[in-house]
Image (cartoon, rainbow, N blue to C red; front, side, top):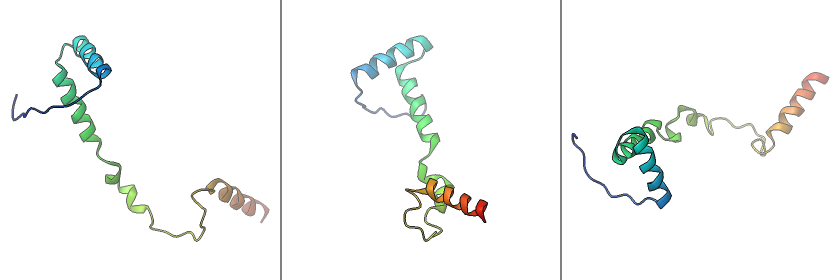
Length: 84
């Protein structure tokens, strides 16, 4: 155990039971499962870190309800294109 610090966490009774069972099946400690879960969550990053968020608000369509009625607007555009 290198450079580890203890931390107290409150879990629901069913979470503890599930962790105990999983730890037993895998032959590891509950602490190892928790560390693994924390590592997994931290490696995912936050949605705000996604570069696609830089596109939000970048353009203005001029259509006030585009987000809510995008399907209708797309259908209208296709109809206009097909009917010339």
